[in-house]
Image (cartoon, rainbow, N blue to C red; front, top):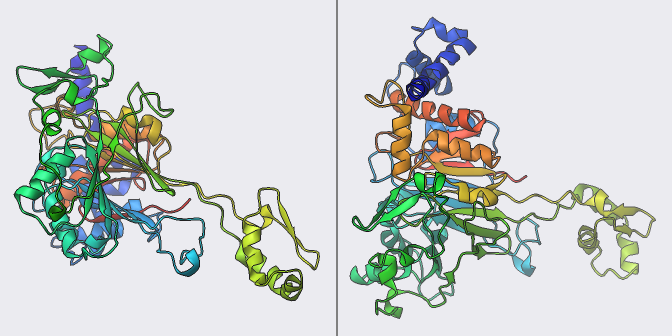
Length: 529
């Protein structure tokens, strides 16, 4: 009886949410007053062009009504030197309205000019930036060509979360597209590719079998020994893992240390290193790929799970931790290091200019370089000008700018292993493959939909929202939607995605300016702090 009451309460969650809209906005009662009409009215308020009009058609992604009107952009900057492009937002197979998994992180640092200074005047950075892709599902190369935000020649790194086809099958095709834009004789560095072990041999075989000589120089770094979450149990009879929460709650199972190669001897991961196909210069593979091993005693480990220190670019670091999925899978955290504060030119420059002659007499051949001296003062330090003006570090330099953090979860039923890495993230990108929508989902319940998602290694909006709340995430973007959730701008589709957002908002405690259900080619700026 208690479980039946719980199911009934969960089934009524969305009805209550829609009814609350009616209570909070009495004007909505001027419609029929039903919860469904209240949701539609909310869609009309957010996207006025959908009321009593044909389905809007955007000629470019920038003209998409969601890009123009979604509340996630209400308090955001129009552009930034870091942003996320959602190249594909579907799970399983690509469709007409959504491509499968691919997320691009654009690090729009300006290239360095003469004398080693960046064009924006920031001499503290040694990082050149570029576009980093996370997962490359089937048809990614078509999606990239649809987007004006992503240039194939700018893609410098590709990170794969796991081996499932909706995350990997577009990799060779994308590399071929990138190769068309690259001059093989230049000194450009190779494309760096990262993913769970077995990736190097799989990619080598796929390129060799398809005789894809056009791919650009690339190098593969393998994330080794990715363990299955303790709630997943290998059943040898079926040669696959099944979700078994009983192992954790009643048997105290822990994260393993061997990875799939240690548990399933016939898996690809176990067999890949036994193959004798060697790399060939005719197919662009470059030496130097690393094997990246887990660190179980990492200071930011959580729940006994390991952490991988995947990459360190000086200004930006990349970490990974294991996800709870049916095959080895990781989620990534990209961290920008904090930057020194900006020099207050408007304060310092007039002082320098009125002291130019005296600074020359004092030994400054280029008096304006005194500004660099002031910027590099230690906290509490001071610079005294010839006319007696004393400028302190605190007077002249703004406070350090805290670095930004982006979390990109792989497929998962539980992202807990990322908690130590994801704390206070600026953006959390979390899958929400399935959702229970009352009136849409027949002959099921909230409990059944949640259980089905978890047993397949996936999440609901509530699971994503709960993780975001646990790590104090500032914004939550949902992706990896089931094929039944269309990505077009029809009122029906917009209303369904709005209901999914409302579920995540309730679980995360965030508001509508902080939560979005992503659509293909959505661009989300990540402003500096």
